[in-house]
Image 1 (cartoon, rainbow over the protein chains, first blue to last red):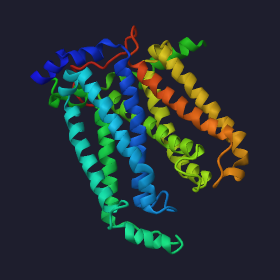
Image 2: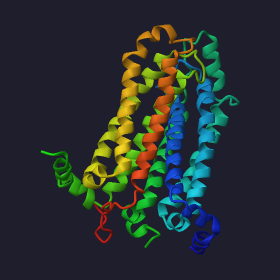
Image 3: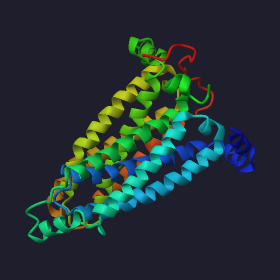
Image 4: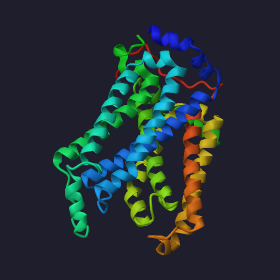
Length: 182
Length: 178
């Protein structure tokens, strides 16, 4: 963990640590943004499952929530990077941190692919969906079981990411002998 | 019985003792609390934005709010239960903690704002449910709601950083099971 210690001693890390209120402020912004990103993703997933906003075409729901998801994620990356710079050893020695980063990559990639497939530019579902609405919106084109499963899986990954985020503060308690602290 | 002794008896309760001694209880309860709080804020934020006319006024306000209601209250109830467990574990510390007191005050304000909207402003919803800009009282309620809930989250996160108070952490040299 030489990198962690090196970062810990760096001037940017010191600068973040020197301001007492900066880390709680960054964590608060991070949590508020979790609310925006998680619920935006949840709205899209619930629309795919057919339990919410079925009065709107899927592309409308996607256009309403996807930007909040992506821009929210940008805010979370910025606050997250600053938090890591503020306490690099704490983060790098937590198994939860590395699991969280891995799952974050999975969630972002899966959401991107999902959007490419079913979103405004996609053909997989959009065509049938638009046709249904063109016919007066009476019928809602049902998503395939695979698409529903994918949406549910993405939500499960977000859940795991949120849990792992909080678990960074409790690495030994959560992982016992597997924790990198030991 | 004074409030202080009530707080003390909460701290001495069996469930509080369990929260303090179980190694995994605190991280799990805290994670659920964060998730529930995020869901409360995220769902309320959608309704607040609709009051402000975002993304548009076409979708009826009541349709936006009704479909999220169960999710918001379910998440709020979950946050309440997990929050109560966290409070119980260190009741004396929370009770004397300024950030915690401000958070509770902000929660009361959020409730008053919601009650005011529901009991007064919402009565005329028939006039502005669809395609009409909500009245200024409704838009104000939306703005206040966003500000107050962000404030709640900020004070909540601040509790953990309050100097001068010792939160009781579970011992780390015990076996890792419930």
